[in-house]
Length: 327
Ligand code: SF4
Ligand code: MG
Figure 1 (cartoon, helix red, strand yellow):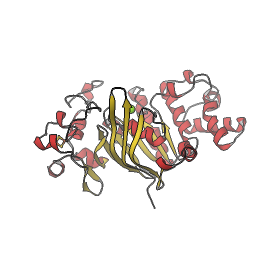
Figure 2: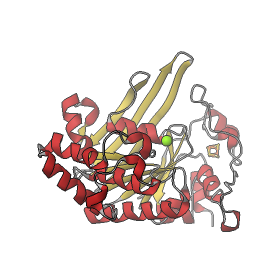
Figure 3: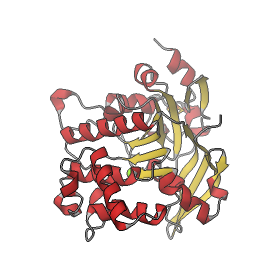
Figure 4: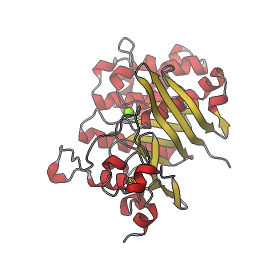
């Protein structure tokens, strides 16, 4: 059987008045049914833009796909008609956004918004659609679903609103769910509850899930594999346990070192010095070299290819083999 969703050598640039920003520079990853891929990186690393390109909601212009493929069940979505892509959106691949308040429409009740998909895509009556919306609220464990279905987004807490978003995204029973920083706006306790809910739904429905996050702390229990992004590239991919036990890229090592410790609750440690690069002027060679504690001369001159280090892991560092073989 072929892969469920594969992104291959994807390239995206934004053409602005100030110049061309190379936002995605050859991203390759895949997700299969029943597994969760976490895509990890700082803001501006291209993880959200990759997702938006998969969903066909990239702002065009200024965003342009300049190369690569996005295959769903083996077929390149970038070559499909707008109509074909619309059919995949929601029913094949759905997305949960970070900010539920701006993603939901304030003037319609949540039942109407969830039910919209059943009415438009499945031709259900208003009454039937509302019934299905109640079932969806039950599915995401919102208490008193029958009453709450007639309430408006502002009447829900942040966590409950995010559950509504998840209900909406699952309405058409997608094969792939992309969750883009789904818990960022929530407090820590609620974050854990939402992450548990997503993990449970992913397992029950055997969906492929792409979990986009800047927080390595949240992915340990949820993800099967991790793809680490930097400056629009994948710099390391590995099974989650391998990546934690033995990271093979200096950027991943930096991220692992910056997980806040319990006694430093709320304080984000910045152990990776410097800032992500300006995507209009990506450094020569390895784009991480200005920030890398291991950088050598070669790092300024040659782009390190994503080197396969084993069945399930790869790293884009000139010293990947030394790193993975160290004790
Ligand atoms: Fe650091 Fe060089 Fe490896 Fe880039 S290639 S991550 S600069 S050691
Ligand atoms: Mg983002």
